[in-house]
Amino acid sequence: MSKIYASMLSIGAYSPERRLTNVDLEKMVDTSDEWIVKRTGIKERRIAADDQAASDLGVLAARQAIERANLAIGDIDLIIAATLSGDFLFMPSTAAVIAGKLGAINIPAFDALAACSGFIYALATAKAYIESGMASNVLIAGAEASSRFMDYSDRSVCVLFGDGAGAAVIGATDDPSAAIIDTKIASDGTQWDNLYIDGGGKNPIREGKPYRPFIRMKGNETFKLAVRALSSDVAEILARNNLKASQIKHFIPHQANLRIIKAVSETLGLSEEQVVLTIERYGNTGAASIPMAINDLYESGKLNKGDLMLLDAFGGGLAWGSALARFGGDAGR
Ligand code: ACO
Image 1 (cartoon, rainbow, N blue to C red):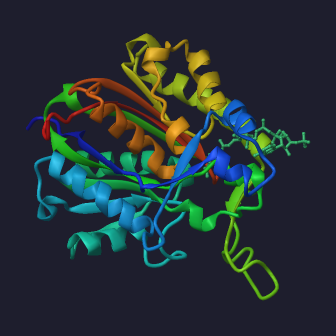
Image 2: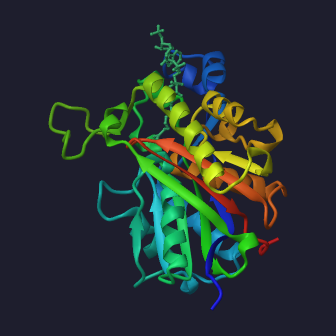
């Protein structure tokens, strides 16, 4: 029997229509377009409509990904969602809500909770399910409505994040030239207080405290930890697969800060053409940022079957991860 590989069969995304520009933010907090562009690379971000939660964005991205894989909802046998701004606090999972809205009843659905690296955690899990024969077609979705968890008086955080969703279908193939080659995920829970959301059992929201749970971040500390972890992580995944950075067609990093992306790209010696950037238009869309960036590349006609992608993310947990994958989708064009 030939070996079963996991392949990214398709990609889809959705970004809400409402735009929040740096100029808009100038009216809300003590900041400037110049500071935000220079320190982060962000010009604008999208904000979900009042009646859209993370699952609504995720469903739109998921439908596109399933259609582009030439599959029907009934062909999906597992759904994994990645989010830091899900519809509910802990239960139900956003994956279950997405599955319900898609009409995918009676299949497993769960969240991969790893903040901004959640999409890579979901990808690693989907790969393992497929290679072990436990699933044939896995829908993975990164979906964020992080504006709901934003303290719009905290200028060090609110300028960074935006809403959006991206999804992919990971399916079985016997073709190694279209396979996910390797994934590498890791965490360091001793550093949790650099980046977290208020309001769980550790820090319950009680009367007298702000009602809404907010994203809290020590930006400067997180920045340094992100550059260090990501640089060594991507070097390691390349080395253990005997690949050189020059062989990567598309480096698709989590879009948290242009300076982090540049620092990691420079360490690897990547050229500008290899690095995919969407941060200017969407900001940090959490677990959705990587699939949204893959989708951008796909829709601009630059992503073809067999292209070697290096994915790379870092976020709350702290949790981080990278993946080497050849794009497996040629359907839907
Ligand atoms: N406008 C103007 N000034 C600002 C703003 C703002 N929006 N935000 C902070 N400042 C000020 C600070 O108050 C500080 O002023 P001070 O020197 O008078 O005290 C000064 O700018 C410098 O602040 P730093 O925090 O040192 O700025 P830095 O260059 O580190 O940039 C940033 C801050 C953009 C948050 C950066 O640290 C960053 O991107 N961090 C990493 C984010 C990240 O990767 N997160 C992980 C992924 S996200 C996830 O998983 C949820």
